[in-house]
Each structure stands twice: as C-alpha cells, then as structure tokens.
Image 1: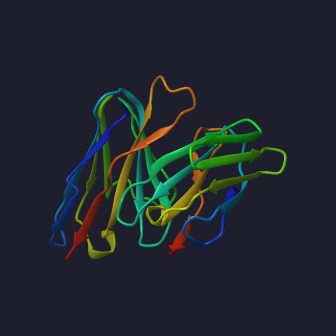
Image 2 (image 1 turned 30 degrees about the vertical axis):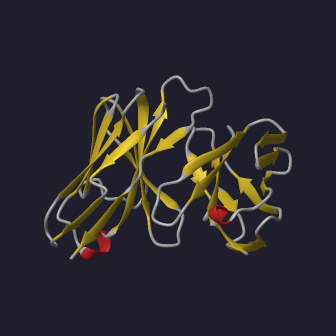
Length: 109
Length: 117
C-alpha cells in the first residue's frame, strides 16, 4: 500500500533550527511536496523535490533521497509565526498526491 | 499568479438541506481539480478528482450521490453536499492543478467550513 510517515508533533525554540522528517512508500514516484498549514486555513506550498539533493529557499530547505524514500524539511532561524502543521505529500505514478498526517510544530520563545 | 478561490468560506445549515461549494481558479486554467475533506487535527483526505468536461473520480468510501461534483469549465468546479447531516460537518478544501505547470503543483483554495446543525 501507499504510506507517508512523519512525526505527529515537534517542539523547537525561537531562533533555532528544526528538521521534520518524512518517509514515503508509493506506487511510483513523481516528486515530493511540503506544505505549511496554519490552523483553520488551507495548505500553502513550501517546496517540491523530484531529484535527489537539497533545495534551499530562504529559511526553508527541503531534501530528498529517492533511494531511501526519505525527505526532510529544514527550518532555520525559527520565528513564532512558523508554528503550524507541516504536511509531506508524495506524488504517485498517477500524479495523485498521497498525504502524510502532518507534523504539528510548536515554537516556544 | 495561481490563485484559487472558494465560496462560501463558512456555511451553517440545517440537517437535510443541500449545500453548494464553488471552487474557482482565478488566473489560470485548471486541467484537474481536487476536493479534499479535513477533520480537526487530521490530514487532508482526498474525496474526488475532477477533470473538466468529464465525470469525477471518487475515492473509495466517498458516496458519489451524496457529494455531487460538477467541473463545468477549466476555471470552475462545484461540490454539492446533498441532504447534509451533522456528520458531514467538516473543512472542505479544493485544489487546482495548473495546465502548464512543470511539476503538477496543486494550488489550494482557502477552504469552506461546513457546520450542519
């Protein structure tokens, strides 16, 4: 079956760095997305990886290893507004997004 | 660019009534639109995929007669919750896949919170 695993909740301190891991098992693979979702709002796009390696975009970076079925989202210089759920989603062979349950990130002062 | 709107943003209705939710891609043509449902503190659950001009493909366990989807144009899809009941109360989110995008990114609408009394 198809499956996405990511931690349920993480806590980090303002100004620090946090890494949110995601492992996936899908029927075929056409890329991996990370989305940010604040409570009561729709998800917003953060990153997309389809090739192995690290993609950096400002304070956020995303890494992919296709051979390991593994990705992580790295958030630097954490700000209170980064408190949100972070959703990992893999695109399968039918270009269908398979969603993880999301990681709730709590930022403490 | 790539803005998706949803209307209404919030709706409260009585049990037994039908509710229509609109999803529009405002500045691009969407080859495919998706309807999701999200329960509190849970991830998104795909309900159906709709392509313009054809019947929607429903996920297993989603009643097609209860959740009617119409994708009349490349910029508009509607979800009608028929004979709504309290268990249909949820956050409904649509997304649209842009026709020209390189990597099939989905752009999300702001969501519709449905409360059935």
